[in-house]
Image (tube, rainbow, N blue to C red; front, top):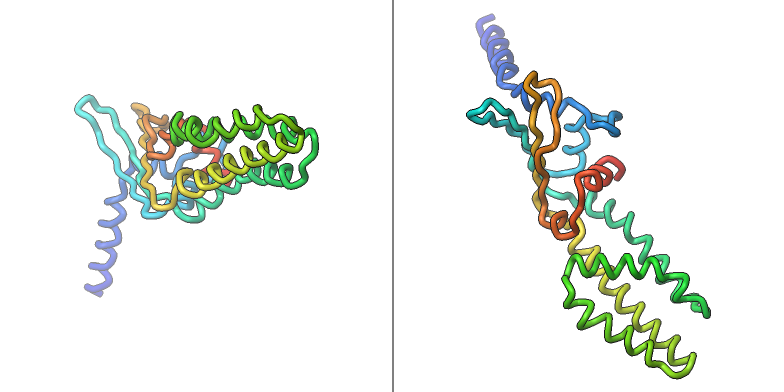
Length: 213
């Protein structure tokens, strides 16, 4: 009997340790993603999840989540962007006189992504010289061969970038939300991860990946 009473006291004590401020965020939902709680979405996306709350001297309460990008999350993110790679690669394999027109928008997107990731150097040293070389071709045969070399370089660089730089496995992440005065609502205060900063990802873009993978 005494053992049962002690066990009951321990359970009650542990229940009392639950951070109510954390629960506001963890058990809450984000506008546009009401189908699941923040806790379920974030803990299902990132490994090593940890929740903490702090209250400033002015009475503001902040709830922060930290975690690590999992292999599953990395793969899910890559699958969305590999479509551009596949489209250009298939078009290049098919060839045709209108190849440049077919892939123009995709190539511009890839070049911008590479520039965001590696800076201007990758364009100046590896890609733009090939583009100039293509433009200097004198025959149609030369133009086709040189344009495919230009596309191949972009595709190779883009694939490596996706595999190693976009939402890389093992990279730490952090989200912090500020609670309203009555602690019934919350709004994003900050979010961070090296790769998100590198590619200038917005909060909404990050949420889309978290909730739609």
